[in-house]
Image (cartoon, rainbow, N blue to C red):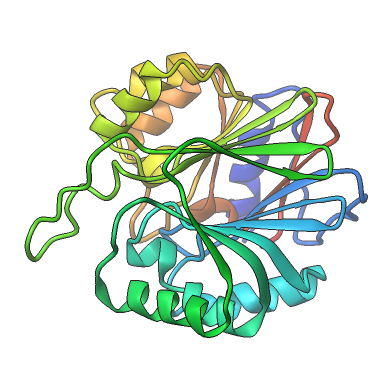
Length: 284
């Protein structure tokens, strides 16, 4: 435990205005933009809170859904105003059916291709059973919560369904930005080489806090991505068993970026107040 906390503190020291606390959850002010990367292993489950409204990006695995629901209960999140599924891999949509069945969800946002497998079918069935509004993202779409604007960037990559495999669904991931005054966050799904190239052609600008693509795997064009996006803080959703690529972590550190990995820090919460300054806390 002490080793994990020390790693977080070392990472935090690399960037001004970023700190890392211990296991106790900090008090959340209503006007704060609070972004929590829930530790589900090598998978994504991100909760965004602002002025009492909530957005979840991906849901982790089916086997981690009970942990996610416990976290929501302990955090006081009684509903999800919006649920965004970036793509249909089991580490992103696996827990969605259980979460949709257990908690009220306002609207779900989906990538523009048909998923495959049990997790996808269970999720879609749960959405239909509860009559939840579902939006397929075919063009860039804004969501406003409080004073924060989230933009879901539509993918322009054609989904290729390869028999017996997942195809190129990682590259079809929805990418989301969150902008609150001077605060800028980017959540890059599981983009691989083609998806990163496509994103970079759009010239979306720079972002202070970036959820790195594909759990920190090193892609050929990662250097171009880091240079274009210019993160101050990089969050990697990996696990001890399937850890981020050392080359990518080194590349981020060479670019003076503080790196937070769920494999080392567990659940990570980043809080900001619209001033371009961020506080990172390890929740365990």
